[in-house]
Length: 330
Image (cartoon, rainbow, N blue to C red):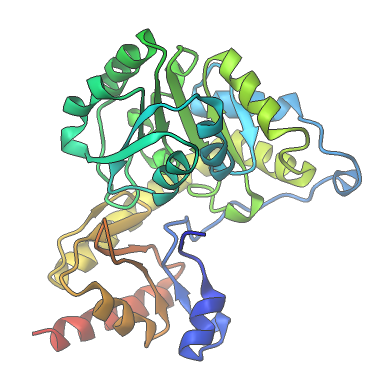
């Protein structure tokens, strides 16, 4: 199993610090999560048949013709490689490691290619997979370019898989509106922008026959009844969404400015920042000793990613730790 952020139990054991004494910046999730409403009592009792209202709410929010609800985008990432015969697969790198991991496990010829070399790699692959915005670097690809790639791949029976899990703060980048075209598959997540990772809810937008294949592979009762009700409410709450986009834009700017003030030139989204830290293990250790859990990337995306603090106390702790790092690394 690959390593991910959010593993506070492991951090608590390793550094002998109680879980509630950590500032967890390791996931890039919105720290101000959507206030989940009370779910109907029978949601815990009934088998969770898919509610069509959830699909309608998702299609409206993402601007997509149709959406299939899945148990987080991770479920789709693991399943999609099983729907193709052995293929030539290119995964943009560095990126969310689960994509390359699962394409490599299912008999495909998989290679990782830097974002700036994807155009050249396109003629030599059947499937191209990328995150937009990228996790962890924040790199982006223009929608027009993505649609051109999807058209080229679709003409020869190929796929362009676009993981837009962090796309809710940059809706202008999305190609979800075009996901009914053969060859284009779009993944979306409720966990990031809405801060509801525990709900385990994601969506796949794609050509109807492919969605049917995916649904058949994943089987019945993919997402729980309570998760469906909470997600439907979040996807329909336009006032909360607008206010949160404005808040995250301000906090994202604040985080970039705080890092810059401490000599760190970063990139990312309104939810997280990443940079190619020269001493990533030492920085990670420094922050952990102060009860701040950040994401260490020791390999492909060698560097550090951190998300937004929840409150002013969190911002104060982060600012102090960054200042101490800056002074100590001189």
